[in-house]
Image (cartoon, rainbow, N blue to C red; front, side, top):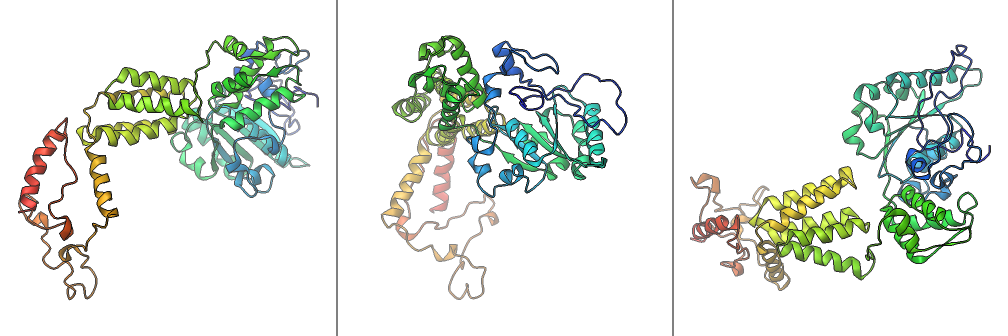
Length: 481
């Protein structure tokens, strides 16, 4: 089959327009289109294939032409494609099972669906949840049943892009066919399936997560596209600065990197050079000086944290924006926010850690670009919160004492007394249960003898710690007698 012909290269498939009535039980042709219809690349390139017709002189977008033809060409998903891994076994046809692939855009979900179909020799049907409904789902399943009942039975792979957009009713329509293996379902979603796919479908499918591509993987895609006959076939060269900027722009999305590369290639003559200036011009985005593996990475994150600690939300937002625009992993940013919610705010605002943790969860749940809002909210919360380093100072002081040998025996009355013979050893004898006291606080020694009277936590007196300081003083008076 020639490059770009129907049924071979594809991305997002749409349900075909109504066709003339078919002879019942005889016509087992796919009921969904196999023509390349990847809307994002098509819109960027300006190309639009005719419905159901070969492309003629119009080449598919670069990202489509460079779709991996085998597992060996897939990059960035080593955790799923190692020998014996579930996805490799599935693609190689050794373990037929329905699967839900979830991960950020441009990580290879559609490509893997195609490889599964090719490897198993099954008929391929594809629907987009944006345009298909229950009627289309049932139509595909009916054709799949007829294929199984034909003189030469053949099974069907049903790929559903953006399956999270299907309603519960639409997802329920798949259950019987998946359960009976009338179709091998491959669902693709950018959302966590646990929140967007009905439980019965989840329990009948392998759930596999694809990772955003790292810089090395995106760079490999770019280099391959420049040299490969399916791609630019060496017609242009790519400078190191331009390549680095394309990698940053991709933000882990392989399709985005190839689309930007194609736009840059279109802007230079044959055998021309794609420079940083060319890339900046075609994507209308100036390169941000930021090296995720070098000094810029550490300088910007340091300035970000110090701006939060210094209670300057505007400066903190500036550095946050620099990291996001430069393609910094939002999970890294979220982790730093969680750390510094305790380190720099602590109990002066007990909700700070909750806000940072919620932002980290949002990053995992929705990803970029939307998670930038949650990161900004947490940044502003921490920067404007009252500050205290009393928590980190307390734990560091306690650990320092332990490392220096101040770790004496646990007082006998605090030891475990739940085993036979404990009382004879004096364990738990004399322990006073605080809840027996009206105030739930009693005079009692808790630390080892050598640490009696040693204070670790010293509230700052700012924010909520003002009240904590007053309460702690009363507690220490009672507990220490």
